[in-house]
Each structure stands twice: as C-alpha cells, then as structure tokens.
Image 1 (cartoon, one colour):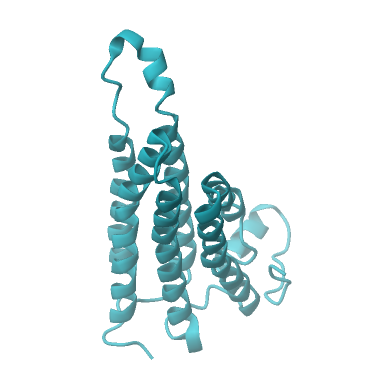
Image 2 (cartoon, rainbow, N blue to C red; image 1 turned 30 degrees about the vertical axis):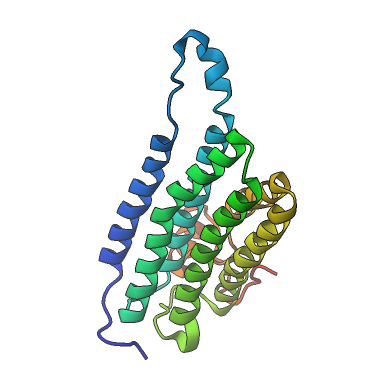
Length: 226
C-alpha cells in the first residue's frame, strides 16, 4: 500500500536526470590547470590522480543513472517514501564530486590516502544503499511495482542491485589497508554494472523486439538471471 498519494514517476525521473547531469558535469571543475606553464607537460602529467578520480566517478554516476532508469521503468508510481529516499539518493550523488576531489588531492599529495579512499567508498556505499532501499520498498508486496516485469526479472534485478553495497564495503576495508587496492576494487564495479540484467526490459518491449526480429516472443515464464 502506498504511503500517501501515489503519483506518476515522470517528474521524479526528470528531476533525477537533471541532478545526475549537473553532478557529473561538476566533476571536471575539480581539475585545475597547472600554475606553472613553463613546465606544462610535467604539470599536466602530475594531475593524473584528478584524471583518475574524474573518470572513475563519471562512470560510476553514469552507472547509477542507467540503473535508476532500469528501476523506474518498472514502477507504476511513487509515494512519499520513494520521493524522500530518492531525494536522499540525489543528495549523495551531488556530494560525489567533492568526494572525488578529496580522493584526487590525497593521491596527488601522497598523504591521507587511506582516509580518502574510505571517505570516497562510504559516499558511494550510502548511495548504493539508498538505491537498494528505493527498489526494495517499491517492490515489497508489489506496493508500487508495475506489471512490466515478471517474477524472474524482478529477482534478477534485485540480485544485481544488492551486490553493490557489499562490493563497495569490501573496497572500503581494503582501501583502509592498501589504498590503491581499494580503488581497484571499487573500479571493478564499472564493467560489472554496465552488463545488461536479464529481465530488465519490460514485457511489452520484449514482445516488440521479438516481433521486429521476425521471431516469436519468449514466454513470460522464461529463465531469469541465475
């Protein structure tokens, strides 16, 4: 049962897209050009931690954005709880450019790297936890879940989303010991989460895709992401 009035998710998704776009754009503002232009090539090379933090965070925010669409493709509406949780998620996403700048500064200066990786990982972990909270709340007892996803697809999406907080937590723990290893573990999230999820496409879209290929659509009870 929805908490409060149930609304269409279109405005929430549009607002979220705007926050994702602004946050991902702000990342480049954390890369400052070298002051000494007499040794410009050397100065640009020394900015490698900023380039790394920029690329890593850009791809991670883009990843959250992509899976945010997967999630809201299967919600028929949103209530006050989803609005609140999504607002907290966006607040965390908007914080990531600062966390990225802290990470870059620590690796550039050679001090505080463990703290920086833990700080960065915690920010990501909070975002991943809030992301999961939205999905689990919406799908529990099919409170806000649409009929576009079958049970196998629902379980596959849930399994994929649940991995992130634990994966990031492992990166935080390892980063507290070996900062470079912690960053590497967090970076490994990127290829994994850009993989498609079995069942993420709505039933109607799967049917249209099957017909456009000249094949019969697969039965709804097909296998999901094991």
